[in-house]
Image 1 (cartoon, helix red, strand yellow):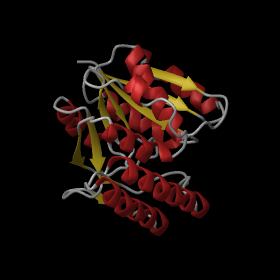
Image 2: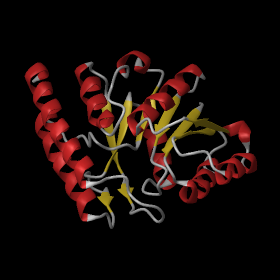
Image 3: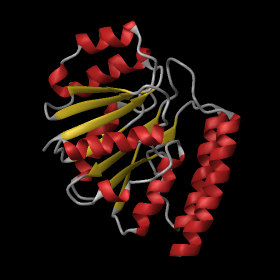
Length: 235
């Protein structure tokens, strides 16, 4: 069983090194793929040279291309390199490596596993008011659209590459945060089996959140339109 953990990063050098070390200590069959939109720095070069490269892959992109496109790149990398499962998580410290084993266990019995912040046992721990408000509002909208309790905007996920044609299903999706709910809507429409496990998201320890009021407003408005389209087509 080959498992790839994919992590998009943007200026997360302080958070990523301990995260990589914890993930590599989990299981010997876990590899890591970092998709980095940060400017290449001396710290990144030192990090790359210091870590075991047989289980660690880096992709430096020339500019900020969006978290959604990074997730697509991670999944397609997993497919092209014959991994069985791909897990995606944030590199800012909000997604804990402690959540990974439960996703690995669950994905063996489903097409897609979403780490839910809203199930019993899940939580948004010490998040800012803006991020909590944005996340809860998005969840209410997607619950109404899908008729389910799926946490459609969660980025901590596990994909079973053996059971669904993700190379086809995840083409031509938004390159930013909209990727998460857009991909969930498309997968639901194509009868992909989606299940959830509860996860606790911590507040970040270092760095600054990329979520702004402008970005949150854009995200919610786009989600409303996408949800209406999904309801009209599939419900």
